[in-house]
Length: 272
Ligand SMILES: Nc1nc2c(ncn2[C@@H]2O[C@H](COP(=O)(O)OP(=O)(O)OP(=O)(O)O)[C@@H](O)[C@H]2O)c(=O)[nH]1
Ligand SMILES: [Mg+2]
Image (cartoon, rainbow, N blue to C red; front, side, top):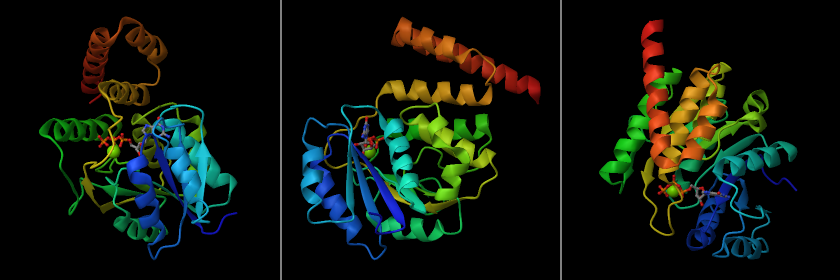
């Protein structure tokens, strides 16, 4: 049963060390929310821990999926659940404390006046702690590229700490978003801005995870570049290019992405 009007969606894969404290902290906030844990049959037993917690927390719901199906499909499942159960706001959040629960009340309150609120590292007052230089460069470059290639105005395009309004989710229909993994976030933002919906950013300090392992890998970087190209130049044969990259392995994926980036750059220059 829907107890509150906002649902916090927590995609989890091997977050046993974090999940119990995180859910406890979220549900102890003054802002009443329900929580949906989406667990992909984590080998470390995160799903069982979450299930056991349900007796203590009636606001907690758990979606069990049979295996690791990726972050993008986890978000989609969370949005579907929220729409089916009548929630007015949906907050997405990593389950590793990088997205600190203390920002949640501001996301929810700002979300009453905006279609999408982003917990932003790149707005005044925001930032990231504990990140190695390489991580800072990759994240900064991905965000600059997204702004230049897609023309989106938000400063943090890849933050997963967000609050969506129900009406916004209905308008952009996440079920039809093609991207998977982290590029899902870029495509969602692009759709929200393209539909003329209102986006606001509130500053957050992103804290590098203290427990558990990161699931991000190099492939995500290629996927994001691929997504930028697909959204900006939808008439190019992206399926063929993507298939080629996968078929030929990582070295060739770099070459394919390089060729795509170069053509994109030339095309954008010609259009000016
Ligand atoms: N259900 C589900 N959750 C996932 C999957 N992949 C990642 N997650 C969760 O998505 C959130 C973000 O993943 P992280 O591994 O923290 O990735 P990240 O935050 O970009 O990288 P780090 O900063 O290194 O932690 C975490 O809560 C993960 O447990 C997946 O395939 N299925
Ligand atoms: Mg993380």
